[in-house]
Image 1 (cartoon, helix red, strand yellow):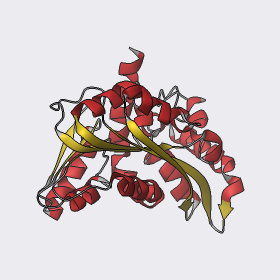
Image 2 (image 1 turned 180 degrees about the horizontal axis):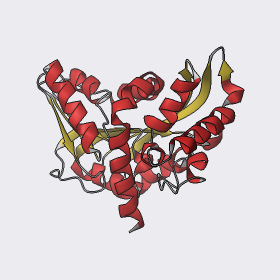
Image 3 (image 1 turned 90 degrees about the vertical axis):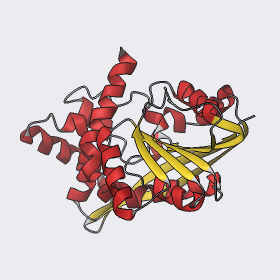
Length: 272
């Protein structure tokens, strides 16, 4: 039941965050997404699976790289994320992409049917990362490539206290092991257990820049993983949590805003 609860929290939490996600996170996540796509080296004509696609920030770039003869299937656990991404694809007239809701641990996809699997900052939300990686391996063709990006170590992510701030007010069940995959060589070990070869990891430091208190709080509470819990707060408790969060990142004050340190780990592998 714990895993199912976590999935429900993720599903409905990201539904709440969907409308704010791109405005608060598009710039901040770009360094990890850039490295992920570079590592994936998607070629024209290839079939690509993008897991935890959100509103398609990586999906559309992958579709462009795959070209008119290629194809991208983009999945997410959030109905609202899929709805928004689909609307964007229609507005942009992107023909080689499809968005659908799907559980990363139970991919309803045929064996050995994709050339590349990518997952940008989604695997740390999955209750059983190894199960998800085994599913990714199953749908890859022999010699197919996988690239996963996760947040790095907790001590290297200046916004990390957001989870404790929320959990002190309501049990969020967001992800009890959020930073686990980015700690040490943990993601490499998961790749090894799943049977991938030619495993390479790169750790990058970045800055999450926000122009004001409102932007910093919007990203943390409205456009991120604690959105569901935050929306349960009274206005008084919301303001209390925002004040505490701003205090937690005061060391990173820059002019009227903030430059909050962040870290990403990007790991690639090849199916045997």
